[in-house]
Image (cartoon, rainbow, N blue to C red; front, top):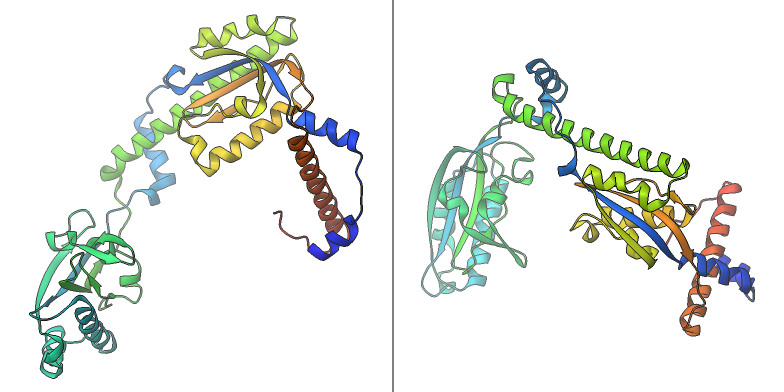
Length: 361
């Protein structure tokens, strides 16, 4: 791909005037009005009936399950006098391997055998076997709150105890061995029993199902209200009202309306729910909003943007394209634009002739 691109584009010159116009269009400034409509300003939907809640539960009952329960034996290997962390790690690895390779191993017998045959010059160990009756991840005994080292991170034993890896082959599965934060204790877990999660009966799931349905109805009504507000403002503009007057409907509906002047498109598209700009979804949404703002005609509305707990309505009254003051940066942008256009042309050619198209960089 890189070789083909180099051969085709070598010594190729673009239309500098056209590229300059495209660059100015992409980096243009806009003026207009922006209305931020929060979910809190939308009307409250009617409470769902008991029949509606039950029907919703019937459709989504797999979302409402009991918590999985597990019972364990926790092997605690304690470093004795003269034993350092590395030696403890090695002894724990030996015991873990012996437990893993023996079917229905006698845990205590494996440990006592290791103690009897170990070289005591590296120090001695002691041990405890702690039986944990069936519990959930949230109700596990205190021993499972012990912090262990997992690479460069620390995590509670309970995270290991309720991992999928531990029960991948069913009851009797032995975990890896882990040292605590101080390096004086090692832990190995054996799964003794597993009670899988099962769908809850309606009586137990009703409250959670009702809450989920109410939230869904709230979001649906919010988006419907935002769509209707966007439509009413658009119709007012079509009827001949100026942008400021048309956006009064947004203020009446509870939206925060701001006027912006000669602002970069990226700045206006960046008006999102706090925190969204840090997420991948927020970044994708901003790119889509920027694209729609570039295509929106003067004195019309851009498509409605729904961002989490708010909706954004933007109307454009003016566009401004100016000469780049920094010739170096402008030329760099033109070169980047030429590169992008050529790669898009090549990808289209690949697709047209049914040749494998490389992924966009």
